Length: 285
Image (cartoon, rainbow, N blue to C red):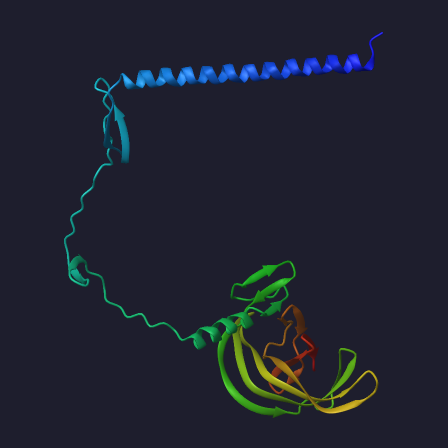
């Protein structure tokens, strides 16, 4: 019977044989690689090569032998001739003549004007008029789907204008769990957006006034404490129209129908109050 030690010894001899064979294989492979490189060097040394800068559309280094030439392939050249007026452009110490172009003066708009127009367009895109799909309107809608026809108003102007309005004094609305009783709405600035549409052959005016300011209110907290003359930033939207039919205004994703008749115009008032980093909208009438 073969003992454990004899088995381990036999395995060790196998491993030693395998390792030695691997070393011999790598050594012979290295010798073969050296012989191949030496032969290649011998062939290269016996041949004369010429190095020159040639062209193959773009510049490229070409290798040639006396019996083997490479031709250059160049891009075709095209020469244009200009006839007409010229303008002279000057540099620090020279000038070039180029085809003349009309002289114009570029006047960049002020940053304030650009910011105001950007904010105006953003505000306009969040206001739209919605009509039933069956409404006979001559003007093509800005957008139309199965729910209705939609029109964006046009910007008509803006102004600084201070007014104190008490139309809704005493009106109470909820505000984040509290009760806000309106005392007055102060307006400092307003924007006007308008759109005229022809419905059933009659032209109607649709105006949306956007008033910026603050609401003065008496606030009753959850605990029942009453705090007077609390000021909240707000935006006051007014939809005015002489159209007696079905129309609504969509403000920031909230839809409000045409308001009641006041004199010759139908008026809908919506108040957006900013409180605790949130905007809350109310239909006032």
